Image 1: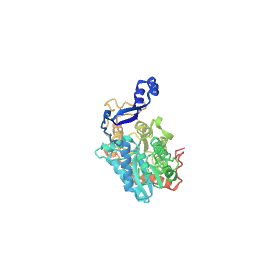
Image 2 (image 1 turned 135 degrees about the horizontal axis):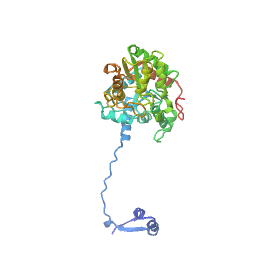
Image 3 (image 1 turned 45 degrees about the vertical axis):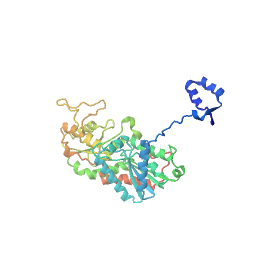
Image 4 (image 1 turned 90 degrees about the vertical axis):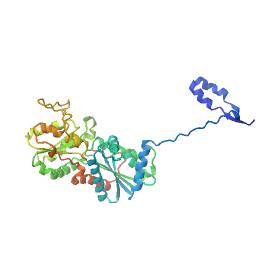
Length: 387
């Protein structure tokens, strides 16, 4: 009878399950045992097929996109918070085209930083489905062995240098420092990595520049009534770099052109629509027309709903509004709020265009991109944070 020899190593696994005492006994029985071939039963084993997880699937999709699209040795990645509305998609498309025309030596791609917006846009929340991927997928693709751009410019499409801008910076740092350890360190040491700052990065330069262009665009409206811009803002606990002050600074800069300009937000404490109303009343604008416009890169969910929507749940006939503890009137749009307070504020006075749809304002972002290109490569450990 033909025999084979094998080491009883499987015994170790059994020992582990019954405890250390049994495992110690293994030393006494670890020896070669002869087993007849006839006693060995061959059990067919089905090798499982390992499915790609979502991350690897997304990475493959983005990398293939970049490989097929690559025409230049340098690239610009535009990073927006995100949007689920077709109007926003179109605004991003036009922005990409504008960048391709202005920066002909660069490939141009666009990314979302919001996972919620990425998922909802892909699901076609508002009737149109689009795939936008987070910045790490694009940055990793730029470093792929078959791509390896020599210069990577990341342009923030944020309005203020706040919480979302911080996320953009952290994406760049993780990429530059090979946080996952799966990129070519030699490539990372050689690539020129640059960062274009948000629209209102600088109090001294950007705020006056944006105010000037907004006045040119809205001076006809402000000649007929109040123009109230609705920004996003950060809650106090997330007011990174104290960026909320840009809204206050912008209102002051705009009021040098007309006292009828006001800037409020949906998330900045003490600068909700109720506070805009109080400032309007104090300035003597107690009736008349109120034009509302989004002070956001795109006219998306906030513009369509928080500003121009028909949400009116907080209003109670004969009692008015019930503000929350921070003084905001929730569940009521700006349109409905000012309309109930005696102003002419309706669908006709809603100016539903995001800032990227205004070429003169978009150009300021593009100026930041040009400044980044002309400047020194980003120092990886530090970053372009506001002082």
